[in-house]
Image (cartoon, rainbow, N blue to C red; front, side, top):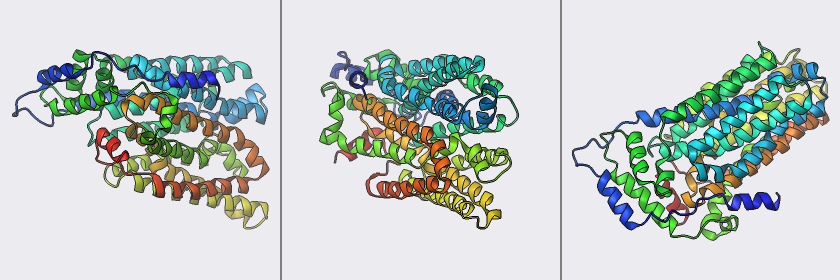
Length: 484
């Protein structure tokens, strides 16, 4: 990472707002306090609507990463691209996302969570238009890079926004909608890509989520925690009341938010080196470690080039396997959402990691049999079933939960800089896997999947030893437990 990038991260957090003092808290709590007879539960309608708007960015994320698999053959034929050129196109999205991740915390803290999502949409729209008109690799790669930058910001802004607006008892399920809509966007790209040209695919699945998001942002409130941190008293009250309902008693939640922010703002401005302080080292290790686990399992290589993988296994066309890959993600992700706030984050991560390593081992075994010319009739079945076991297992936990935990475990004043670091690590791993995958599978398909399976064993040990359970705890309770 360059020194300029490091300085960008160090400037990622807002300066504490000077107006956020004790009298401000007291006066605000008096304003938001209501009678004991007021409905304590209020309404979650606006929280649900706000989440629905935010996850349009997640759908855009899925559309971007899902585009390359069904489009590979047609783009290579139409633009006469080599394997290396298409590998660059497929993976350059992760380089753009890495830069987006570097700036994501700073942008989200400077212009708000809504402003960050709007900016992301603009970059994605520009990128898809460039891909649509591309007649060669230069404009094609430029457009892919722009969409990468946009989704790099989305990876931070969307889960953080949802975590900050959601009631604590619904936070897990609502934040998991981020991953659900990612796989929905990816599945739509996979399915639609089998029946339309790659240019039409860019216009439809690429532009629609961004347009919906930009329109929706006009109707939803900003994160109340961000507004409180900025000292915007009236807007904080209005936002929290909209999110909890006009008849809800928000005094207790407002008090908890302000007391937490006041305590955090007594601390000095966060810097990159602060992440290595004893009080933050554990959440940094957990967040960065989970991002490494997510990528080292092979998701972006397998997902970006699924169609070609199935053809390597001996299928005449990868379309059947691609359709199955697309269809299995959505119902399994729904199951994960249901279980997240019931079974908990940690147990789902363990199940997910075990399943991904098993899926890679099955696929690798299928390719090994092909190399040895043994049981050749079983090779396509083993390869496809292994990949489906992998993606089903990934969807139930490892896809969503690392982002959820990242949004939960960091205090507000350091969330921007820490979240940017976690996103950078994630996208760096994504680039390594997505760029090298085509070369690895040409070297040894069996070795490639067994390598991912080996990383899965290490990932399982990491989750079992270091990752805590955050189910049912407020953000403030989670931060306190990590420092105990």
